[in-house]
Length: 186
Image (cartoon, rainbow, N blue to C red; front, side, top):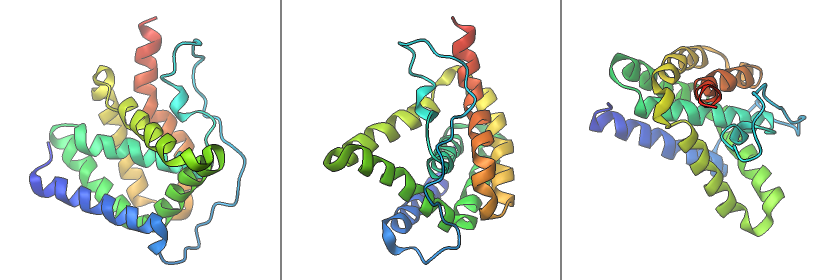
């Protein structure tokens, strides 16, 4: 588990990231220009099973933001040595990719503004709650933490321009432990 100082560092990083997304970030060379939607390779889901729907039909910026959210959950919920390594990777990742994550955050919010108009904030908040909840399900935390350790190390080390290409596969890896658990229980 994170110490009080570790939690404060992550909270501070998230607060700084929120400030970036509100328009205070410096101009970036990383831009997302209305690229085509990405559909991640997910197993078929039954009509009443919305567990995999949270990461379906999202754009490249949203995919980066969802990957970041999964790694945020891992940095807070994984235990022992893995948690420490993921938290270190996560904090460095936020610093290294500050501008790219600000652009991804804006893409996530922009999609909700366009789709829901005046109700976008409530809809976005509900979506983000569902997204974080998806990655906190205890049924697959061990495997999720193993994957998150590898993904967080890769994201920490890569250049920001590589995130858009890497994020779809990374997000699929991060959600696979949860999806395979659901498939096995059917």
